[in-house]
Image 1: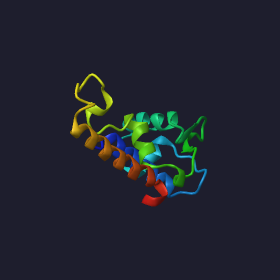
Image 2: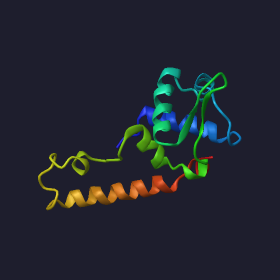
Image 3: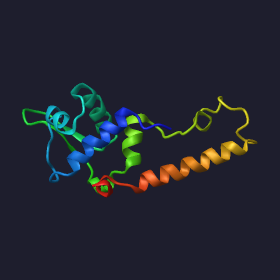
Image 4: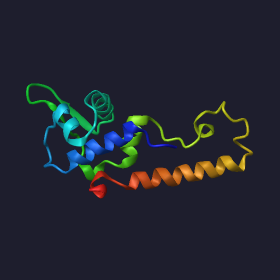
Length: 131
């Protein structure tokens, strides 16, 4: 598994936002400039975070984005899955047609165990913890 640029950018923007007072609304262009994330790419990322109920999109002249949840209630796992979809360290864990040996393969069980450990650590690490 590789953390994509989109995940890195999402984390950067959210960490910047988490450092400000609760309820602050951030314009995408300002957030892009201040977090160092390209504006057009950030727009796509932010919409994914809205769909995942991490952020709220605020319309209007003073619109932008604000947190829907508290930073301590948003895990790295939440962010990664909002941006990338389900966490899968290997295709054989997600695609039943990919590997025909899932019931007899010792490696499959190890990959599953490693994935569970990784997901558990990501779920335990919140934006507040990173701050």
